[in-house]
Length: 455
Image (tube, rainbow, N blue to C red; front, side, top):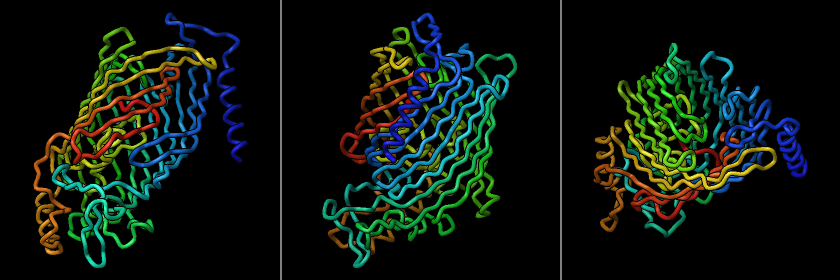
């Protein structure tokens, strides 16, 4: 079976490489202008410090038409099936269609995500304490000091199904301004942690459920249907490897609770601003992303609060701040609130260009700095009260209050550097390394090896 998969990958790569050997056309930069079909099959071999080693297969399928839009394309379809050694699996397909809506784009994303060790660090950023390797034994009740036993405290089991369809279309004759609409459906399924080595341990998720911080009608998850409307300004010169321009998206997301009918109707606002500033032609670019999301009306369940409600996105996961897609080097999903703001700053240096197997390649470095914080708290007063409940279980020697730290929220920051391998300005293999500046956000250097820039 393995030989068959490898043979198939080689054949598809050869097909993509040979599709245009007869009549190569070059642009003014000496790049091969791609036309027609282009296949990018790859084994998925990655690593994420929060999730483990990743392995699987993926396929990028491009149709460049007559090449007039290159490096733009008529449409792109991606398929991925992969798994991580810590117990996560990805089954996903997404596509961008530039030839269906006049002067517009159609985006579709369908995925099922299994996460047997989903990270849950509590609500409201620094208000939730973080004790590396602390554990809570069920019988007898005992808070085990950090390092004394392998801990499952900050883990739970979550499954997610996601379906997103979004479109945007230019407004009149305005070159870069578009309106957008979207529909989305999410199903969240939370289960008790069932990994044997964590048997007889409470998780923080268990403690939140017992205290009522997570309501009984949301503890097992639920369904969220979304209707989105927004404004998009996009003057980027390239979609996946931009070197100049601006991208701005402001989206209102209405989520009427007509499926579960638990009373969790809510309205959120999400805004992002990307700016790509050329310093040395297309070789050196300073860029940054500013983002914010807030609940502006209604009551949101905790599981929906953890999602970033953008219409279009580059990364597989769209979770809360912290981890490979938002705050690199910071504990995954550790900054959760009704409102969150974040910033990502990068200097992208394209250090080498070359041609290989009839494709245009580039190697780039990207030093980076990330920062984010909770700007709108979620059940903070209840969090303080719940902390008192667990004081009854603690001995006089215990000073590890697992629910509330007493700290005020402030910026969660990290810094690091990445290395990119880019094919045809569209397919990006990424390796990034970052470290949280405060140990309360995580310890040690974290690595993320996968695909695409984060913005």
